[in-house]
Image 1 (tube, rainbow, N blue to C red):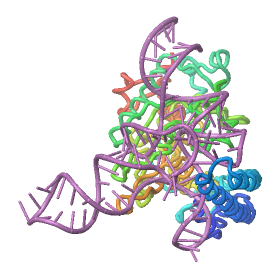
Image 2: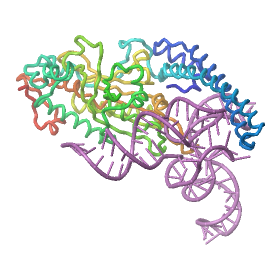
Image 3: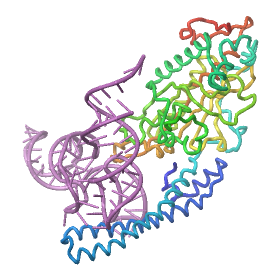
Image 4: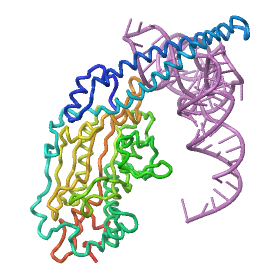
Length: 422
RNA sequence: GGAGAGGUGGCUGAGUGGUUUAAAGUACCCGCUUGGAAAGCGGGCGUAGGGAAACCUACCGGGGGUUCGAAUCCCCCCCUCUCCGCCA
């Protein structure tokens, strides 16, 4: 959510942000709602003030006296007015609340203009795409792939997009997760093992609700399976004020991630490219507003280092305004090269939300100088998502003999130098 | 899952319908005092919304209700503790 003061004081800034994100929002309607709400609020508060004053007066009067009875009669009228005014302002407040939540975060000055994904800027490319393609093929076409990742039985037991990982497949997943968490911990992120179901209040604070309700799995108890560890992690400090000296707070968490992905079909979703359940390690930072852009570069560096150590070619995209999410101020995507599919796969998305998430979740720090609470800036990024990294490694490292060479850094975790498909 | 007891500011804790503007203590900050400190004394000290400001309004786990008026009474929900049941 945006600062209501920003909207009132410089609506043109907000207007420009909406234009850069290529969204369609009627800002004037929001402004009109806001001013009408403030007008009505003043009226309600004046009436309540009357009630309070009468209350003090009546406390001094003798109960049952003519003066007291007269006052009761008089205040019955005021009470009815208060009720009417409160009834009137309620729907207005709800409308304003919804309208404020329809306003996107302001893109940072360094975010390039553009509307479509094609207009994202390739910020950097690391490693050579040609060098890895000797025996590459799409991972789902590799002989014996189904022995490692069983989609058929997953579909029988649960549904499409819920595969079983078997033998070296399961071992590979576990090795990647262990590697990610060890590296992230070394980089200063405290490991967290969070709940993988969250309540509606948490899903609302991070923005999954109400808009993206259909993208989450919901239980009979009105709990939601997490689409990413970002949700429980960010909500850890919801409605809290932390000390300034505690910042920056850096945490990482592995969770399975659950996404309904309603309406996704086609070649983009073959094999491990898109699943309803997948494993991911998420990186989270709560930082002082003055350092959030430095922290974003550091966060991206932490995610990139994982790909470098795995010797995967990748590129860094700086998202243009139109492809930037609703809540982000600035975002980098990391994409690995999958040599078999001959395409880039997104494995991490590193974003600075500035105070947008923090305002919605009410996460603040106490300013040391003023003693007053201020909103923190939050950032998050994957570090990393397992299935697509696995896909790229299987494709890129496929040998002439049909085995996959395990990157040196992963061998201690995997326990052997080659993965076999039988 | 069942029964009971609870939930009040950073912390302790009073408050069973109206001078409560949530007492008091404690912690913290400023001042006086002191060679310096402690003690003592005086003042300040929650969060949010509205307002140019003076100031006003809301908030006692959450949401509804009763009433002229609710921290206080009623209903629903959440959480904590104790006991019972079940259980990896």
